[in-house]
Image 1: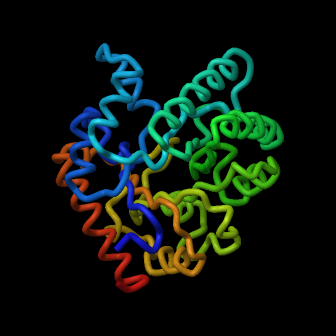
Image 2 (image 1 turned 120 degrees about the vertical axis):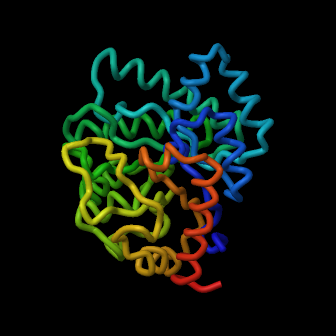
Length: 276
């Protein structure tokens, strides 16, 4: 049922406390077509004594397709030594994406702040690095970030960079929290949407947290899914839809159960929004 939008993927933050080998098993066993992996998934494996090649071999052996690979966040606004380190790590993530036959990397704003003008300069550099590896770069806004916190700021950044391989990563949760619920992304052109993440929003979302972990399974909150998925269908979006629902309540459950629930609820909402 996810075919109208391409692959249905599982973002590993949804099962954050599950080690990567078990997470990959759950993703495959639940019926997700792909995974969205994070830089921290690799770093946690390094901490157990695995090399980068070991991690790549683990992912390949799982048979799970990696649709999107996250880089370490912060490079959009970082300066000095932080910027140098993050761009070096950015290139390593690009190498890993190529090794996994993953055509897209992504980034959210991360812990630093600065001006959109500076971020445009950094995005151009990031996009050029990604282009050297033949990759597309999807940029996400975070509704709780001090600067890159709404679609308007995201548009200024991505369109200001004027890089063909840099585009929008839209997230239903952040769109709704920033005042763009339902069809609130109508003014984003289809070709600008590189990736779409989703989870549901509580009617009483947590405040004062930069990276909220209060996200709900689709259909259990206030997101207007008929409008969201219906608009994606109208735009003839064929990219990944990635289920990202970090929440300690979900982390306490078996990963396979969380993944199966995600697939079942998503397919139900897609059927209601766009038909079978």
